[in-house]
Length: 264
Image: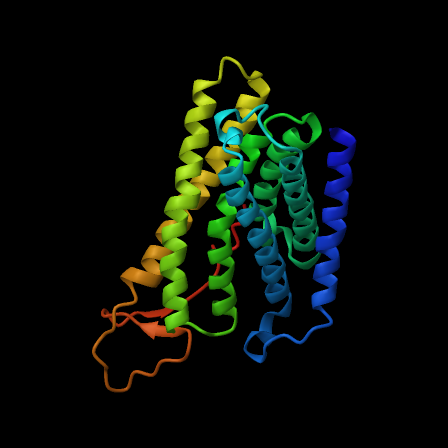
């Protein structure tokens, strides 16, 4: 399993790096011209999320044995899906390293190291592939996160599209992020005596890291997009710019995407 898995990982890394470079040849929307790199990076992340999230959902629907036996029960193509995701996270980590300072990217880089370490176990050993495919369900929520970020970058907040995307993000966060994380945590706890201790620690660390980041992300979006989005009576002399609004206490609020770069 290892040689073919490594080959797919390498091909995926090259493909996503090529996509990064290819997007430089395409025009960036004028509204997002202030941060062309972040626009390109998010577009590449969106491609990965659509591909692996939809693949994981379809795969688990057609082959439920992967969730019944997460260690051994998987078809050959499932390993390819996991290897593609490993290649993406390596490519994205490289992109972050070259385009941001360590202070800006350290949190995401640590996240990527944990995720790559966990998924690579399946690629190298050929086991735990079903478990890894279940983890890729989180990418369905990441799809909404990336769409939300693109709307922010293109100055489309507030708008109907942004509101719909925000609600979709919260819904998929609960259904395709928190539920799979809970299932994986429970399964790992129940099987802890049958799995090597090193893998239990690695898996538990990965689940805890992504879980904490996911909860923080959900709270941020709930507060930013829902609780603070209620319209207030107009105040004479108050001027608002697109992407900035004033809450009912008179505090200026600027929508930001500081926590929207979680990539799972």
